Length: 134
Image 1 (cartoon, helix red, strand yellow):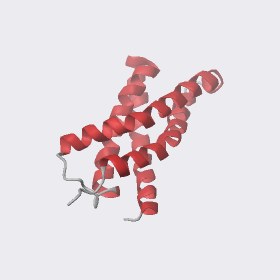
Image 2 (image 1 turned 135 degrees about the vertical axis):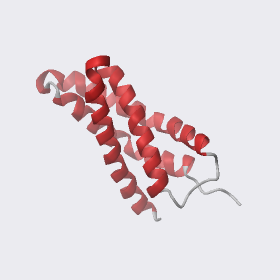
Image 3 (image 1 turned 30 degrees about the horizontal axis):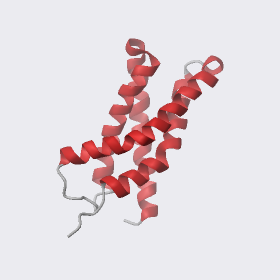
């Protein structure tokens, strides 16, 4: 798959991850609060996007590593994008939280996802789903 199509597929998978992220965030918030719930929702979203990217976006780029190793590598590489994502989320809560109420966390997740997407795509393509060398 060409890099342009991969990026579009990655973005579409990201939308599915965003839906999971938001659903888990709002489900867990009453129990854990907005900040801890966000960490847990990120874990649910990253697991979802790994599975979908593995199946669709990078199906032709399996490196031959074990599935556990691949998932761990994906999770670790997504942490850089997650740091950007979480920073934007926190800033959005602080800047818009009072004026937007319960909408602010959802916007924070969306803004953060966009902010971290390019970094996450490059990490996934070149560090996780790289073609095995013969």
